[in-house]
Image (cartoon, rainbow, N blue to C red):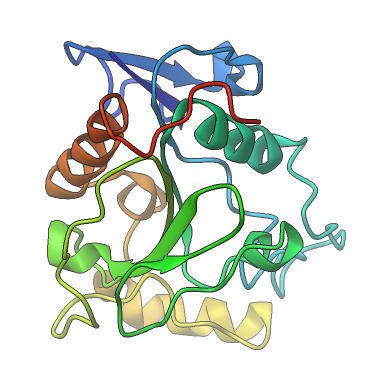
Length: 211
């Protein structure tokens, strides 16, 4: 059994045999084991636009996610598995994790048995490149398809103001992805994360109960 934490209701982890899905209504911060996890903690307050973006009426607070990332990190460290967050997530520095090399490869992330890497979800079914950082404890560390993708849509182009975004959206709408398309984990990438999490249950490096 695998616990999939912080996932979308009726998303790719729903109704899967051997997967205990934790959408928002279940509050994954309360997960108490005992299964290895796949964690997708909210990233809005950790990304490049943690402050809310150019059109935000109220400036947000970096890291203000209600303790979701901290709880997800603790779950991975205690029960084994993998955590996924956008490339350049400020959470890595905030929690003392080593940043992975952009070109790929697994490197040690901390002193809790964690390993981290940077991988493009575009190699695993996403319609955008979506560079992603993984943090894993007690899992296998397979060679993945490293490096950037080409010929894919962009997640978002990045704008200096709300007006610039509005102007671009009128002419560039077909090349942009919807919020759900950006958010949903593609099937091949989901299978990769499931493979990693399942490997934690019998991995010789797994230490149950390690805080």
